Length: 202
Image 1: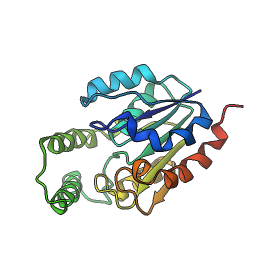
Image 2: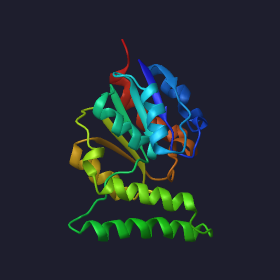
Image 3: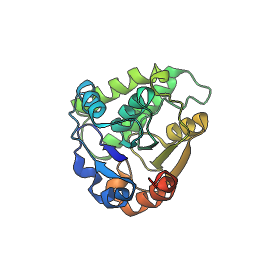
Image 4: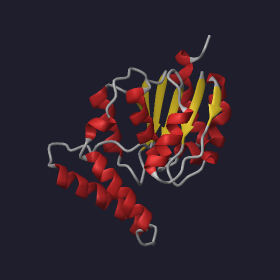
């Protein structure tokens, strides 16, 4: 059994360095370098993941993991700071997407930098996924969602709504932003390792 870690697009495999040793008890850790282009990244991820692996996906890497799981079910799946279809809470899709856009641009303003072309393209890509939520739905029993309450990219409500709807386990970290496995690896492992223990190869 391998543990395949899919980083967010625009990031690098080094993001997993802080949690690699903790994950190695569950198998060889493979963190492929994913290109920025989602289609090319999916091709690389597809080549790296085999049925029965443990798959860990961060951000858009989590979206890729969900897409792969539909065709190649993993032994277990951890989604950390992953994008999920918007938690609509009785509102229309347009209003909910507008809330998400305000959430993102409020962070950009707080960081005192203008929105980049990359951010705009990423928002457009995720908006398209949001209109096709079935592309992000999988029938798996062993799924853990790890999400920080202060995630500036994906509102915590999205993660909680998805976990509740699908019956997935969820751990909310009080801090860690969008990269809790990088910024607070020990706390991230405290959530991931006990949940993975039943998946350990005998």
